[in-house]
Image (cartoon, rainbow, N blue to C red; front, side):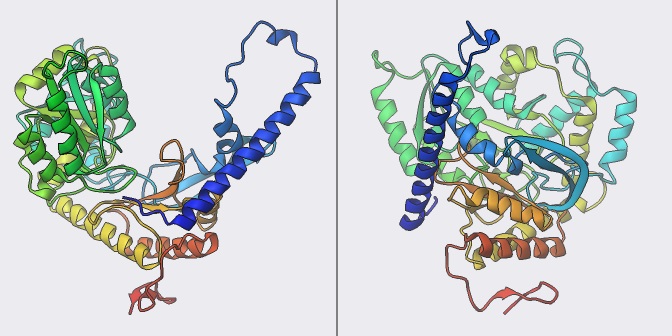
Length: 491
């Protein structure tokens, strides 16, 4: 959980109040000017698309710092990337691209194992697959969109995560948002972690089931909610729930925290609730052999009823999967809209996942997979420990490749991002509505392809920018610091 110092909370809140006040005064002035301005005939009869405060945040805050978001790249999301330079016009309201690029250290991509760039094993096979099949099947799975590669990947995923069967989809977000409404509906109960991803939130809302939330990663509160809901039953009728599903994530993408899965599974077993685990950020990235939080925390995959994951992070591809019992998978293939109506995964994308899984599992005949898994764990823990020693407030757990650095104040969001970019380090800043209003942050993502020299360079830049922006909220350990020569950590 985020420890927000009172002084920081007060100054951050004051900053937003100041922004809101100035913004409202500017809106009032614009309204007075527009009142006396002759109206265009083309606008007559049309209602405004946005009313009142609906677009206030985007106009008065986001659009003034939009150069910090959506930066286009001119190449693969490797360790070092080419970021396209842009300049702003009209008081920073519009952004225009230029022909220039800037070579930057990539600390923002989900390329956890380095498969998103060219790989000696994966890339030649993907190119051959592109020549043999095509960029797309141009069809849904049930009508000509299934190749032998799709069937091979589903079998491989099931074996990789330790479940009897699996089904794959063309989009990770749609995997959650389309699967959850198929698994439960009216008369069902979904209990969701308060910080679950938006795809889970939308899937739960679209299911028609009653949705309850428990405090983030808190098994004790989950048990309280379960006990209360089991005792009360359905609203009005108080009949027993038809089905109860508890949904959690393996690693929370905005927090970098690892799910307390053993305790949550124990609570679900006690109250006969199904467990749905989203491993979008954990599959392939954690665990001794890359098999996710179940392997990391010693949980039997058989104790997790539905396991979801994506291929967009550790495997360097696109799409997602559901792994469960054969009966559940067969039912999903008959009932899920994402399987029946959406275009299937591109064959080259499927081949990329197959090759990446073989490398991770050692089926390529080398130990590259084990080396990658050891390196991402070593890189993540090294980078996190050094950030904390600088006095930065870093969220998350050890072994997690995601490490949010808390910024809080809205003025520090663009300052941190722009200053890092000036020193050729590309970072991702995240603010409302992706996070609570007062909890803006910079989210660092570490890859196995980062060398120790890359990490040292990134740490030096973040330390300098942290001093400049003023985000070192905790005392720095004086006995450890970055050496000026060579960049090694010394006592």
